[in-house]
Amino acid sequence: MSEISNQLESLSYKAQQIANEASQLASSVAETSGGHSDFIIFGITVLVLACFVGYYVVWSVTPALHSPLMGVTNAISSVIIVGALLAAGPVDTNISKYFGLVAVTLAAVNIFGGFVVTNRMLSMFKKKQ
Amino acid sequence: MSTLTTAAYLVSSVLFILSLRGLSHPSTARRGNFLGILGMAIAIVTTLSNPGVLSYKEIGIAFLIGGLIGTSIAVKIQMTALPQLVAAFHSLVGLAAVFVAASAYYNPSAFNIGAVGSIPMGSLIEMSIGTAIGAVTFTGSIIAFGKLQGFVSGNPLVFKGQHFINLLLGLGIIALIVKFCIDQNQELFWLIVFASFVIGVLLIVPIGGADMPVIVSMLNSYSGWAAAGIGFTLSNNLLIITGALVGSSGAILSYIMCKGMNRSFLNVLLGGFGGEQAASAGGVKDDRQAKQGNAADAAFMMKNSKTIIIVPGYGMAVAQAQHALREMGDLLKAAGAEVRYAIHPVAGRMPGHMNVLLAEANVPYDEVLELDEINRDFSETDVAFVIGANDVTNPAAKTDKTSAIYGMPILDVENAGQVFFVKRGMASGYAGVQNELFFRDNTLMLFGDAKKVCEDIIKGLEN
Image 1: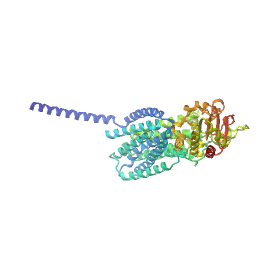
Image 2: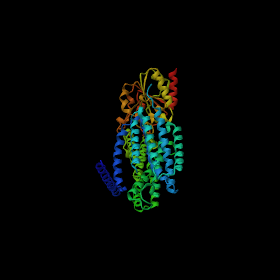
Image 3: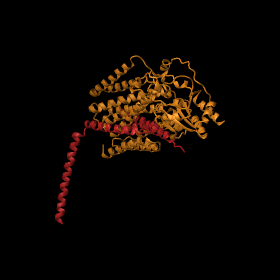
Image 4: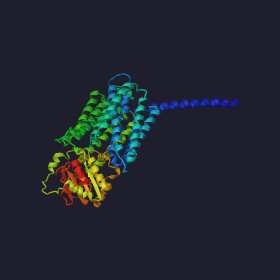
């Protein structure tokens, strides 16, 4: 019994060592390759693929709903609020923060306006009774 | 970005895609809109939980103010004014993009892109391109809004050397961007913004009011690309994916609109088409007489018809005639006729505008058909009732190679047994082309305000 527990102990020690090494390796990889310059090519990949998704999804939208489509796309393009929130986030007050707050307000007008008006349009589309 | 944050943004992106997918049919569309809202809520909450975001109070106030403004506008807006509302909303996305980029420039550490004066080149390129697109979207949308709302004349504003100036300005902006990426100078940043504001105005002023569906869609596309540009600055895939979705959506809509007019996108962009100039230029004096009818005749003939197709156009929206039109349709249905509506792709001032207006007037969506779906049926139809449309019914588009609208797909109303044409006067349509249909034997003109004519026909039907 004691032999097994000893073996287990040494095994777990080894496992820990390996894990440590792996994490060190991972962080050094992240340092060398995780910089911003690599995001560009990654981002372009995402952009191109998303354009294809957009192409097929938008062509499947029925022409009768093209106005609501513009309403929804208008609202979701305000996802730019993510950037606005980060800009407005810091505690210290400076010009950058004010820009961020203005952008939050503008994007909020769009988010609420876009989704509400789309909902209004869609609630009017009814089938023949 | 933590794994959890990235995962949450991914969920948001997928919800946005599903939201657009929901619009493939009216029955799933409202759920689609709800998924969009959910995606946006997840994106906002995720960002708020970022350790760098601390000033909840100010953000809350800004968000509340914006939300209240947006909601109150959206609740009150008349459906006929949708195109200008959408244009106005696009301008806000553009301006927000400019502000986010400016903020990133003055406080890059909040976005993890270095410090002031030492922002990496890649981020500078993305930032300045995002700024330029955002600024063009802002002023371009404001001009489009002005034209649709009537603040600015809907006539194209053309002057000599216009395209040359635009070209110079465009090259100037590129040069500024290059210089800005090297110097990181703040004057250069604001010069890029200013020059883009100017080119945004100049690009849209030469474009006529009825070409606005293409322009509104194009600006829709721009607002998407602006968001994608900011997404690169933030290294945020959600913004890139959403930007690409919106960008391709707007591009496809502009393509559909251009095809609906048989014009190239470039031809629309170069502008100068339509308005009063074209109307007078194309005005070869026509001495032919069009047959004129009255509402009582129309009521009598339609009451005795089996099949009726109504062709609405922008004139119906201007006269707010959709409710009276639907009432007329209901009476005809009660009298035993089959009533359907035919929508041309470029009817109205924004894609799908007519469908919304008819839906607002309680016309069931399965009675409203697109050009491809209904065009063959005109030859088996007793009555075609054209109200507020003109160029989209002109048979010259099929036969007259010299016509400005040659090649444009049209609704074949001339094949119907009898055509009623509701119009205020004999003036030609947007393209400045005389409509051959007015002089056909089977056409009766009903002169007057669209709403008034419908009401008179209703009276005739009730007697």
